[in-house]
Image (cartoon, rainbow, N blue to C red):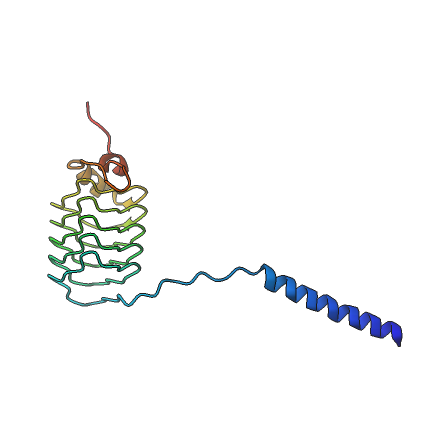
Length: 172
């Protein structure tokens, strides 16, 4: 009887140690930033979001013609099917953003940061891109060709030239 009691006691003690080990070695879950910026299917034309913190915001199918995002924090924001025609995104941080099927036609993207952004099926016709940083961004090759035709400047925050970030070839 003593032998069974010892075995049972050692088994319980082993389970307690194993549970303690698991609890002590567990790492905390990363909390996602709390965001109230869900602008899905909303007309935001001519609105002023300058210097706003909209990190992780959702702008799905939003109408943003001539909207001011100058200096805004738009890291990891989602802009699918958005219209940013003639919008001001100068100095905006769009690092890690998703812009799929977005129109940046005529937009001011001066010194904007698009590092590691996904910019698929997105247009930049007549956009000002001086000093914009597209390092490690995913952009359709045709758009890269068009952007390289007017790429100039160096991003003041990252120190990377627009031409270099797009992978433009220099002509001699």
